[in-house]
Amino acid sequence: MKYIVNHENAGERLDRFLVSQLPALSRSRIQSLMEEGRVQVNGLARKASHRIEPGEEVTVEVPEELPPGVDAEPIPLELLYEDADVAVVNKPAGMIVHPGAGADTGTMVAALLHRFGGSGGLSTVGGPLRPGIVHRLDKDTSGVIVIALNDEAHTKLTEDFRNRLVQKTYLALLHGKMKGEKGVVDLPVARDLRRPSRMTARRREGRAARTDWRTRFRLEGFTLIEADLHTGRTHQIRVHFSTLGCPVVGDTVYGAPSQERVGTELMPPLGRNFLHAARIAFDHPRTGQRIEVRAPLPPELVSYLSSVGRASKADPALIDAALREFL
Image 1 (cartoon, helix red, strand yellow):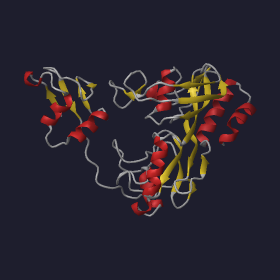
Image 2 (tube, one colour; image 1 turned 60 degrees about the vertical axis):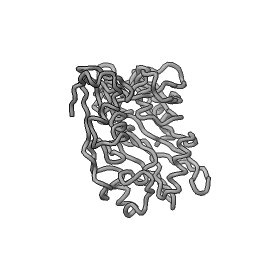
Image 3 (cartoon, helix red, strand yellow; image 1 turned 30 degrees about the vertical axis):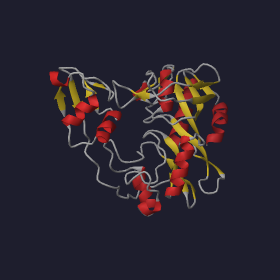
Image 4 (tube, helix red, strand yellow; image 1 turned 180 degrees about the vertical axis):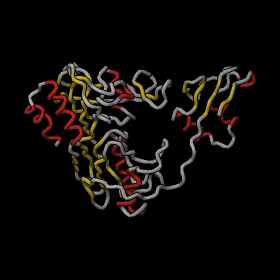
């Protein structure tokens, strides 16, 4: 939908203008569309408080509403841990966690519904499209995700995530050379106003985000790091290291080349991001016992790192030592 601002609406807040133009949508629905970057003024996403001017073109994308609920699908899942309250899944790269943004089938939610016998076997706090889902991983990120099997567990886990009591450790191969052996990236993360599907660390209005990192191994033109998240912002690791000039290998959205080069040798396309959620530690929502679960590094990432190592003429034994606890 497209609207041209006339003189009568000059100086009006963008959200109020849209409420008057779209009476079929609630104010909260319009706010959600703006937060998702689906409302643009002259091609740029704007805040609700933006004052519109005559002649400005306001476009609104209203995605088709998904039907209530998700159908179970017999998709294999690798369970790393399971009891009566929680499960921990090793999500493969390429799988979307829940329906949305044009993905209605093949999601982890559909697989969970099949594995746990329908919505009755999962928490309902997240609504019919996100049963059991407490947190997420990007489509092209693999690794551990905690699933709540009842509402009490979901509520407690959500509270612990909010209070930063859950420890999340990732392994990432970065394009470029990070300075130093360890550090902290403390840059706010916000929606990119020019490209709403992306996030950015270059806006002061962003939400606080902190990533601690340690170097595990260095190769020619690459740095293998271990990263701990203190916050869980959208695309946080990808945005933080891209901002430092060292994007995650394979992450073409944030500046990595589609094919990496080592010297004169062109590496095969990875086909995903070299980003893996390797470990999660949390207090069990019923017993309080500390639970730690690890997901082994996927074979395609091990193989890719070995290829980069051979092209770099690195000692395979040193690479094996750096990866030992992640295999």
